[in-house]
Image 1 (cartoon, rainbow, N blue to C red):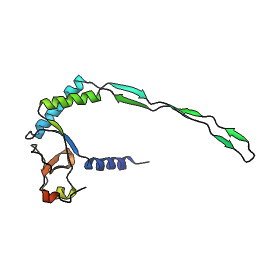
Image 2 (image 1 turned 135 degrees about the vertical axis):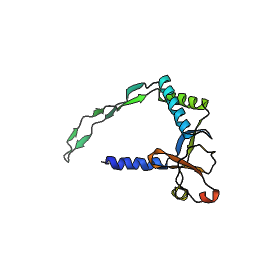
Image 3 (image 1 turned 30 degrees about the horizontal axis):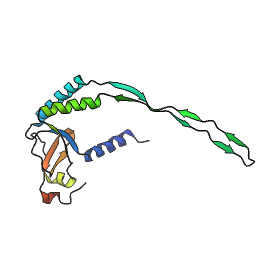
Image 4 (image 1 turned 90 degrees about the horizontal axis):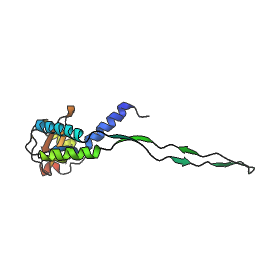
Length: 165
């Protein structure tokens, strides 16, 4: 069994490697981005509320097995049914995301993924917090700071050469 602390640490490390996904509008302040995102999330939740449905996957049958001894006498175990897994689905989740995306688009944002900076790039720039969204280039990457803040940096081609993690 995996201990909760080990599982949490593993998920945290995997999240640190995943691209940073956000809504983006060059020149917008991060505070404005956060306010606009919250307002659009509230609108999306109001327009497409959570609509959970309980579902069950199909059951399946495990057939019985036949066992024979050395004298040729055979015995057959009976088969049995395994019930399907019960799970919950929010059927409005895709619609809510679409409403959120449209709301943010009306405010001039688009959904963007920014790659995470390599460790060597993260160590080579002074620690900071992005407060205004800069112009993104193919050499832009993000450094995730403790506490949930982040820093977008654009590195020169010579700094990116051979930098992969």
